[in-house]
Structures are given as C-alpha cells and as structure tokens.
Length: 153
Image 1 (cartoon, rainbow, N blue to C red):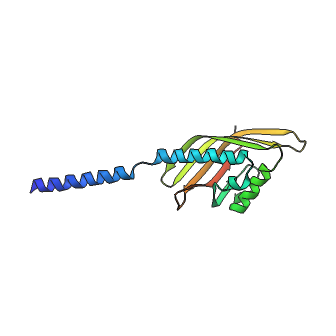
Image 2 (cartoon, rainbow, N blue to C red):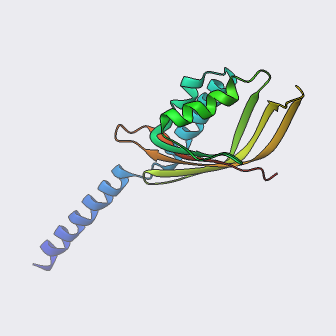
Image 3 (cartoon, rainbow, N blue to C red):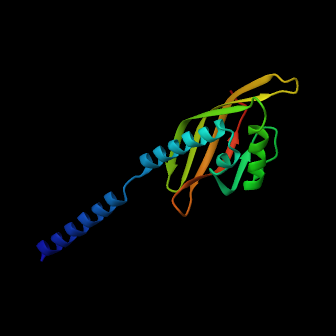
C-alpha cells in the first residue's frame, strides 16, 4: 500500500511539474516583444506617421506630458501626437533602459530626446526620462496604457 501511495504522489508531482514547465516564465519573450514594439513605434515617430504612432496605445490610454493637460483616449492622444509630429523640424527618439514584465502588465523606463522649434524658429532639444506602462490586451498584444514624460535629465 505505501508503494502505491508513493507512486501516486510521485505521478502527481511529475504531472504538476510538467504543467508548470509548460506554462513557463514568458518574461524574457514578453520583454523581447515589447522591445520590438518600441523599435517599430520609434520608426513610426521618425516617419511622422501620427496614426501609426497612436496605434500603439490602448483605447483608454493616457499621456502625461510636462506642462500639458492629461490626454486620455485615442482622440486626445492623436491630437497630442499630431501637434508634435506635424511641426516642421520636430523629432523624437527614445531608448528603453529597463523593461520589466509581471503577468499582463509591463513597465519601461528610458531616455528620450525631443526637438521642437521655438517661436523664433530655432530648434530646441530636450533630453529627459520617460515611463511607459503597458497592458496585455485580450488578443495577446501589448498596448500602452500610460505614457509619462519628464523633464528630468
């Protein structure tokens, strides 16, 4: 009897360990996916493609930019990006330094550089930091939920 009980327990333990391995830790692949999304997002910004840039946001996302009201929802986010990307001489680049994933949420911290033309027509470049929070959507894709820019160097 103890042998049968031991075999049953061993079988259960093996089944559970296989299930855990099958579920696995997907953080590394999720991080790679997000870094790939960042690369494509940056290309959309560089091309000044407002619609493509905004497509990386969830429908109810928010942007918090220094000195600006919070932009929530696709229409407000579209207006925010359009005001930047349609300016002559404007540009933005960014590079994540940290991407961390926990379940269906991820955050990234990084550096960005934005160039805008001032009222005198001279380019003004700001180098600062940002935080982006992403959420995995029902279809498995990652979308930006919150995009926060700072003016901290």
